[in-house]
Every structure is written in C-alpha cells, then in structure tokens.
Image (cartoon, rainbow, N blue to C red; front, top):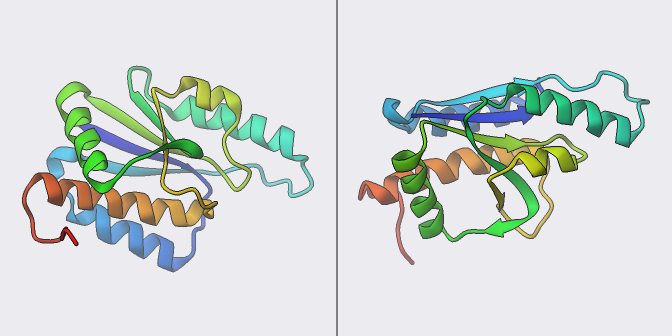
Length: 156
C-alpha cells in the first residue's frame, strides 16, 4: 500500500520537517507513507482566487489516478482516535493507493474537494497548513499503534 501526503508548500520550518520525519519513520514499510511537497505560486501579489485555482490544478495533477482521496479541511468530518484507526485499517484493506491532501494557506479550492472520497477535519480550529502535516503524521502513527496494540496510544 502507498499513502501519499500531498501538500502545498515547500521550505517548511525545521520543526515541521523534523516532526513529520520523526513520525513517518516510525511507521512500518508496508504502509509506505511519503510526503510530496508542491511549490505554490511565487507571486505574493497574485490574488487569492487565482492562487487557489493554480494550487488546485497542481494538487490534482499530483493525485494518482486510482487513489482513494482524503482531503484535510476544517469543514470535514471529525474522527476520534479510534475512528482514525478504523479508517486506516479500512484504507489498508480496500485500497492500494491513498492520497491525503493538504491545501495551502488559503485552503482548498472546490475542485479538489470535489475529487475527494472523504473530507477529514483534524479540528474545528483553523490550523496553519504546516502544522497540519505534523498532526497528520502523528495521527497516522497513533492509529497504526492502536491497531497493532503498541503502547504508544493510551486510553485515558
């Protein structure tokens, strides 16, 4: 199975790179989780709608054709830790390729949401897109540990 985290933005702060790398290296090779960082528009003066349209095209062009697509968006469905584990278990059982899509600072355009099979919200709070990477990587690791009875996850 291949899980691709497809995210707008490069040149993340060191703490983001380190956090994502730490959690992804803990995952087993059979999950084959990769992070694809996409450079966005360089024009700071580009208006928001044009930037989102460009980012949407870039994101869509990097999603594998037959992938099960999960976009991360604050308007999506919130899952408990157990539900994340259940989703991961289902993805592994039913799909060869899963794409987890994170938009840029302006969010996701409608055409990317339309391509989604699922829309997942990590929180009702708005998070910086760079922090979403770290939280997502941790939640994938936590879900895997829960499914595999690893002591990392503790019920409170």
